[in-house]
Length: 258
Image (cartoon, rainbow, N blue to C red):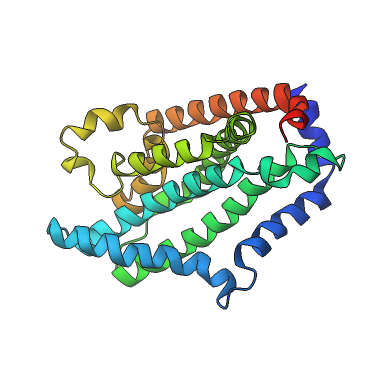
């Protein structure tokens, strides 16, 4: 049943393209800088947090900068996409109640738009590596696989969030708070060797394997371990399976809550 739902959704490719374009139009419409904000905001974050924390901890900005930003772009993609997708059904109720289109397309469009932003941020990361003099390595060849696993995991989260927001309108605010706390408990601002008691938290943090998938090729210039790939793959498949099953099972009830 899940496979048939996704197959039907893929038959609406033109409408999906429209939804993705609509995301960028709504996000940057009327803005002077437009899409440039997708590049400027991560750079401002890098200049503020990376420089401050490297100074406070006496870390080399060339080393810490690429460590921080490679983790930040992964975290930013997961959180922004998931929180945006939480409103994909409630914020576009007309597509659920008045237009016959696969409802799956609504959260999927948020994920695709997020992937485009993520790829732009990867471009910024590569530029920063060149500016800071951080060496490139053959380990970066795993990046397409990283994007795939990260996209599948985030799609699962997006589907769960979209469903939860329909039935519990405070869910997005609660999730935003969880992400806010999670950012400081994840190895993004702090290096693994500086984890201290946070190491135990990192060991059970489901986002950490995805952070390592990009941080290790960029910062350590090494391919992540097979264990990291297996953990990320299991989390991605598991989250997608849960999200897809939940969405397909409950989507017929959306109409009554919108």
